Amino acid sequence: MTGRSSLFDLGRQDQGLFGSSGAWADMADVTDVADVTDAAGTTNRQPKQRQRKQRQPRPSLGRDFGWLWGAYAASTVGTWFALDAFPLIAILVLHSSATQVSVLSAAGLAVGALIAVPLGPWVEFRRKRPVMITMDVLRFLALMSVPAAYAAGWLNFVQLVVVSVIVAAANIVFTAASGACLKALVAPEDLLVANGRFETTTWTATAVGPPLGGAAIGVFGPLTTVVLDAATYVLSALGIRAIGGQEPEPPTRAAKLFGAGDIMEGWRYILRHPRLRPLFLNTSLVNGLIMATAPLMAVLLLRDLGFSPLRYGLAFGVPCVGGLVGSRLARPLVARFGQHRVLLASGALRACWLLGLAFVRPGIWGLVLVMAIEFGLITCMGVFNPVFATYRLEHTATDRVARTLSAWSVTSSATIALLTVCWGLLAAVTGPRTAIAVAGVLTLITPLLLPRRERAVGAVTVPVPTEDRAW
Image (cartoon, rainbow, N blue to C red; front, top):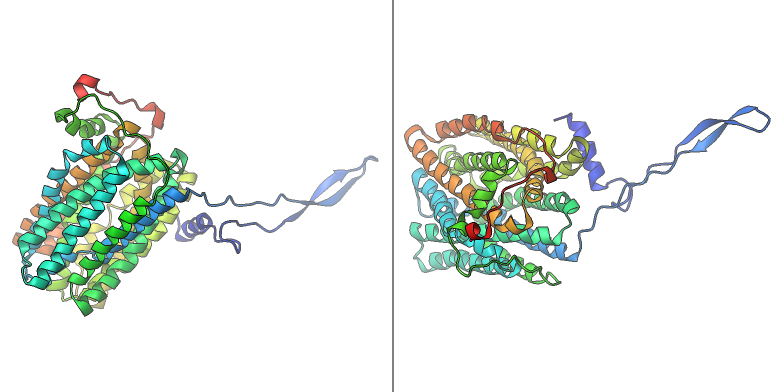
């Protein structure tokens, strides 16, 4: 990455901050001189006016995208307001051990991913918006069962696991449907802009959600954030319902029943694709290693180092300003350096930070160190994520989007679950700090899995199974 000032300038230009309107920015007229030869052959120096330069307006992606964006923003705010709500409930209410907290995080993802496996191809051949609304309602009902059980005195560890499973499965199905919905709503040339706005929303919510959630937990208890998270899924469903126009017809299929070919088609497509396969392996492993350390960091900071819930929220909330910076830089960086270079550079840089979390100490300087490391990691992820999401959609055939995204999400969730269990067991033997260090060292080798060579989107040909083999 280049110097901080130059990157900041690129970010400011992309946001359209020059000029009072915020959408247009006019540069001042510049007067220069030019040599002019008259009819008599005499050369005179006369002033000339340079052409006024105007920045292009920020692209409008339409009202329908606005509703989808608003629905995404509502659920994202709730998700990050309730950051680590279940681990916190397990630690502070049920007094669970580090191994139990890891099992809680892993079990929901693993079983949820298993349930979602056959739902990926089912989503492909259904209208996407009703599927998304159904998943929002399901998540609302599952989450609200937790405060209801707590009020009745019935809340236990098993219920947290069951709710985690339901929410994880619904998340995967929603993600598969929403990716196909976005591709249908937005023109291909606007995908990076759309994904950049989603990324900006994510990191805005991530910056303000955890500190507010931590404060709410400190004042009202850990169940408060779960209630508010559940409510945002209702807002998300209402936003999706408000999207106008006729949804495109889903792909048609010959057979009525789903077979093994349907279930495996997403993985088959990814693994046969020379551009998607290395990115699939890279993102699955990086996400797995980072998320495997999340419950260990909760135990390390809250139990071993004595961080308060508010300080814990600040440690992971304030650095998310880096996500805003990164998401705003993604588009101008791609315009200047090219999509593949930005994907490779930001993907490599995001692997360099995790190891530093193993050296956190108690007190204010420990908090500062966590925030600095998280800021670096999140800034790199803020650049990488929208570029990666756009790259993946561009390289995925329209009639394979839901199955591809479903397979990707299932693999990511299963990898996170497996690694979370492994690191929970490792932490039980070595302690959370050593387990975090091991994850950090392994993350350093993940850039080797990034796609090394650039190739045009249209140049990649993926073998597609025949009708009989697919169905």
